[in-house]
Image (cartoon, rainbow, N blue to C red; front, side, top):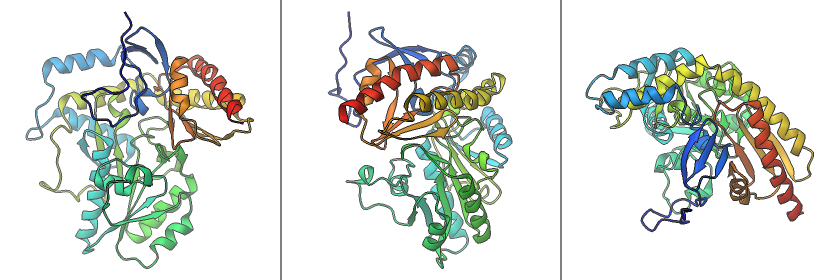
Length: 400
């Protein structure tokens, strides 16, 4: 008997415009709903399910951990915190890690780090540079750092202390901060996710790093969505050959178990002292085991190389099928973080793709976002394009 899925439960807050699907289980890059219909997962839980679903190496490790201890609290040492921190330090070239549970928390901690960095230098009202189209979360502070008037509407007054500049314009950054002694940090996503899969140029990242060094600012790179191997390197900023001072992580770090982290380099690692920041759930034994095992499996299975090669294959297939169409503005991104920007709104494609057996999202109104699990194969990438391309062509034809 088919289960009927309500568009909105009468008992949950009306916070999501949900697709009328309830997922039951998954295997690899496929998921099934409660009615038995299968879908190719091109969304990966919004860049979260790094290892796909029911991974044969991850599941037994999590089962083992659940049988031992799930939560203990940060009153006590958690051995896998040190193990995961050590691994993140090795992969990033930075020095210390604070663990939390979400990307929002990681970004909130980064903002606190920047403010305390300023206060420790005698700056009474620290200011942080943020970007147009940025998205850093929905708390009052991270919402204020976000560059989207629609998600900010109704939540004023926003937190002060932010200077907003356009993406990839170093002169605009210099002009906006000229002669301002209160600037303490530059905060950016190496590839903007919610803003439309907008990559920062490598030269800009290098110039921003140099400017931060010159002026003793923190360079804070939000890798919540684009990090953890998604672009073919562990962290997207590594393509530019730079190191940030502060790097928030989350999403793919635990392959679906909530894990957030703030990785800091020498300029920022000693700012927080006991009592300055904390968390109840962050760094719990289950989350730490998920992070340790995710990285181990990614290394064992060569998933960075797969993200790079299968991502290039997917992007090339999209360009071949859609790139020449007049309604397609740009196909961009790196590795398995790809955006297809159309010249018109395309939110209807989320439901149409689901009906056709494909999970995707549309962000910034006009951008199809593809962030599948990093285990996706070239054959599955071809299948994704074979489902998506006709839907895009049909939408453009009916709107032309």
